[in-house]
Image (cartoon, rainbow, N blue to C red):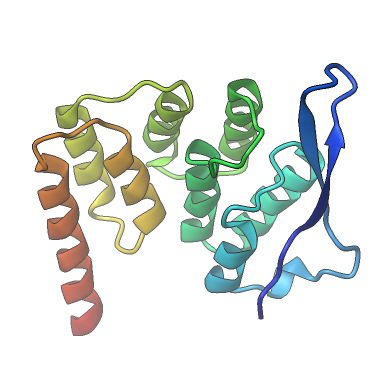
Amino acid sequence: MTLRWKGKIQPCHNSPTSAILVVTLPTNLKLTSMNELEFAELIDCGFPYEDARAAEELIVQAHSISLPAMFMVLEELCRPPVSSFASEEILLNLIDVWRMHIDHPLAESVAKAACTMVNNSSHTVSEAIVLMEQIAPFHGLYPALNIAYFCCNDVDGVTDLKMEQIRADWERSRLTH
């Protein structure tokens, strides 16, 4: 099942040169029956950043699907597509909404990394490695691992090696269980 947002570009009332993408969720869309893959396809490069209600509904939906789906939302918030009109303020507010809907030991540290990314800043490589090591015991949280990987500017490839190691460990564990 492939789902796409329908939306239209409308000029902002504040500025004649700016525009926003107005996104409306179809009223007949049954989000509760989605799996992770369908959810990922729905939000990938199509998250309704400018519609706080729809965004929170997707956060709630992610919570009902799985923990990885929750971190998919966070990754989409801190790594919006280039075509996104979302401001830092909107993204940071949505991360705060995300925080209200999750209770997990990694939530705060990964959310802090996400906020750093939204603020166009970065963690040090060593901070990113520590975060990756905190994520490693939580097998399959690829979106959280992606946030840790992208939250630093690693020109030496240290995080590449750590990412590959964790993914290989997760895959080995998956195959043996």
